[in-house]
Length: 174
Image (cartoon, rainbow, N blue to C red; front, side):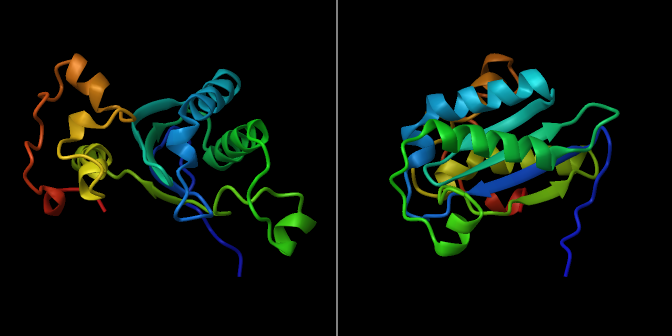
């Protein structure tokens, strides 16, 4: 069965990417490398990061693509590859990954969702920003250092005490 993705030029998409090892801390341990990988790809294949959070073993991101472009898969492939090549190989690699010259850092696939409207957009931004609280890494969204919530606070779009310790997961996102 061939996997099918919904492709919309200029679309806005929510993504979840996960490391192959669920116990990994790679993404936050190598945050500067991850940031460099995003920068490298964005310079060559522009897109707008509307919101993002990086957790130790997964990340959530909301992108808007250029009006004439729908190729988010290529961008993710480049980001994951750039990040992986920058790290020393220490992970165990399965025979199938070895045959394909793959590292064992990322899960092969990612999850995407095409944003339907303004409410969907806002709900996914909230989901992204609340994720560190949901996973128990911090008591407040603003306390997590690897989140676009800090940009939203600086721009006055969210208060520094947004979600104020209350569980708001039922009101947005996935």
